[in-house]
Image 1: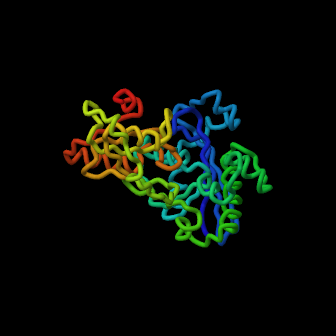
Image 2 (image 1 turned 30 degrees about the vertical axis):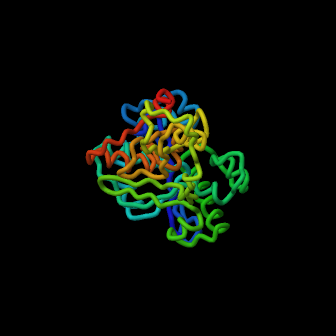
Image 3 (image 1 turned 90 degrees about the vertical axis):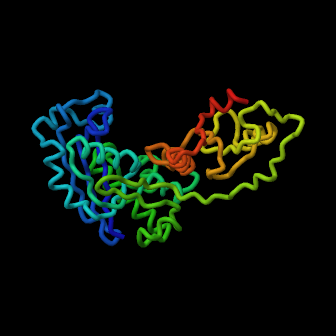
Length: 303
């Protein structure tokens, strides 16, 4: 496979503060070259915590060009290419936020997240951070420098593709259970876990007529859940709805009255934090639907 791994180090808590970028170029599953650039962040401003993590200081970047200058060299290298990052939600966000800061258009490219697909290749590990995965796979790592991290990510991806028999990005949905992310001028679509759903037969959840509550806002209304609830498992919540006299739904439709939103996994829903159900609910509301999106707390208050 041909791909480029990318890694950013940031100067402070702002995503638009890259102080180093690393790229490793892979052709036919062979590492060809690793490049890295130090970048002067806006006002050359650093947080002590970030310096502690990567060791890059204001002195290292005071005479370095800002991102908009370096971008002239980097853009031709990654335009229309396939990028991989370990925790792409972070690195692609750094790229997007920095381009937005400098009012530069997004490049067109595909990308994936090695953090996500590593969980499908090496199941059962206690953690899937780059350091742990490199240790498991005997990959040398000078952690938290962009060039070294991008190279280690490339070695990790090559091993993952060999184990999973991945030969092209077309294999990702089936063999790695992940979708390919896309960045393009004007927007992006995140790389996500491709989940295989087993649709629950909600007709088997039968309510207790003696517990029906006609005064409840959920009585006779269709309720759908998305995300993980912190107060109970979803099956318990669905049983409560059935007991009240409500109707449980598997998916958001024009007949849905309430969507209860629990905690979302950002690795699945992407940094925007909305599941497919919530995105569909928002679109229905924008078209005039009376559907209500409520939090778990609001759900509990109305029981």
